[in-house]
Length: 507
Image (tube, rainbow, N blue to C red; front, side, top):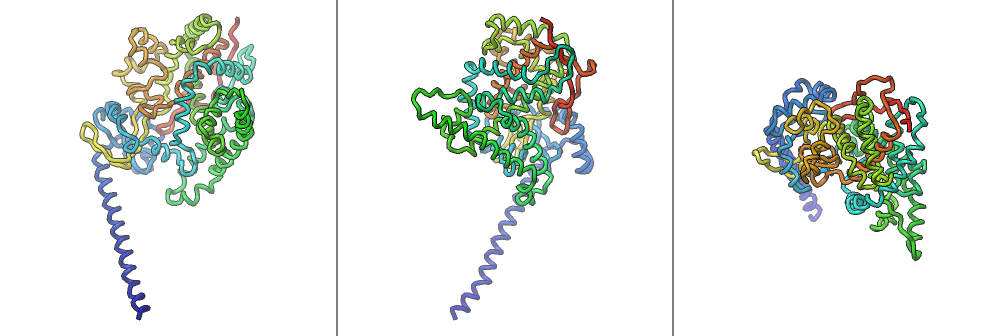
């Protein structure tokens, strides 16, 4: 009898599970219906018609034009842009940036946006590790004044080692040369003198970013539902795991030696990021240390190299800027005993202006301020941003708006140094290379603006100052037309394959 009662309960259990499943499915269905209803209320950019495939192809080829058109059409409204993603992104005019920056991370998330873009579930790039950001803000930036002489020495040594003699005009693959220089210079700050010139470390510094991007691209090719099974098996993803192990092996003896030395009286702690991580209690976790180091490498080396390459490509076809820049650098250095101090870097206002104008003309991306909406909210104009959408701001279009920059189509290398002559605190601060605001989005905006931009700016200035003092350069074939940047979708970068011809400046 008990067995019969037990059997009778089985259909009831099945019915209960089936009912629960049905209720769940209905909830998901109506949630999705509600999301799409809210999402479709946002107006769409209509300048990219056709099938999904045609829109993707057109976006990859003409994204800059689409964002410029959308910027003019939707000056007071967010709108949808069909790109390469399954779901359109929402483009936000800069007028809404002040209210967006006030949204907390649980409403508007930068890490979640990066996680989706970089497929961090599989690449293991840690975008939300607080220790890395905290160390950059609390240790690196305040240390720059005392570290700059050391960085300057490393710049000089790296340039001597990587640049050819150039006694006569000599062709140089400048992008890869800069990558090696910057890997050494950054490495001096990241891991210290024991490793910064080590070939295995330099190999990691130079190749990790390219390996990460290659893995991300291959993961994107896999259907989302199959990624948990197939992504870890991709050769490119396996290469990242191997790179993490190699980094751990490189760091282990250095970390152990430092931990042992800490027990000895009178030990003077090294002044670099590796030691700062150890000071914060991370010395025992070599795997975490390796990932932290690879994370700062990803953020620093190639982005800085691309920025300097853009500046050098521009100077190559504007030789009229060499003399005023060279005169300023020489004058400032003479006033500081030939040493590039923090004060000297601050006084190179024309160089700072030229760097800023190049990044205005040739930004690192067509858009900026990527965020994921975690909780839906209303903007001040009444438009609703539902949870689940990704947003971005059309930064390249902002740089070409004459309301922000008079005669924006004209390159003016000293545009910002002239504005700083207004002698007001606001004008001085607003027109620096490192400034972030609603019209300057190259380093991001708000709480998640790039914390390493002050180090990057100093490093860029030192490299350019040495290069301008010591060399002249021009296009390989002597043409006066700037090498065009490569653009695909919202991504833009100088062509790394191009050569510049260098010659030593006569004393």
